[in-house]
Image (cartoon, rainbow, N blue to C red; front, side):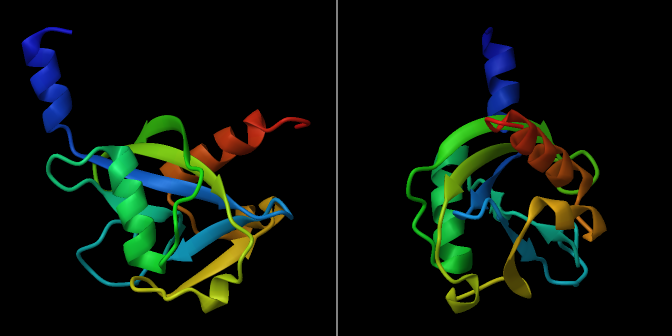
Length: 145
């Protein structure tokens, strides 16, 4: 990669989200605040957020999980990247992890609520398209699907 390409990649706005599943293969979703000035208000999404200056997506997701819900990232593994062209404009890195706690007991610092959902309930939820795409990609790659 030449210097100009490296500079452009470094300047591109980045973010990170986590697909967190429990032992029942349910996915932890985050109902975002319904306020102006944020990407995808009032939508069910994944926990995560934008990278701070100089922060990698891996560092950002650890920070965001702790800040938003008091979650220890545990064994996060990177999955893939998807652009959020119609919301934040960021290139979002998706990570996966598992957690088997009570989501209602988490100290939610942003948004309305956290809830685990079985995959078959996702079609009726209002989810940003890039998040829905990432969840489908994750689910399709699971063994036995």
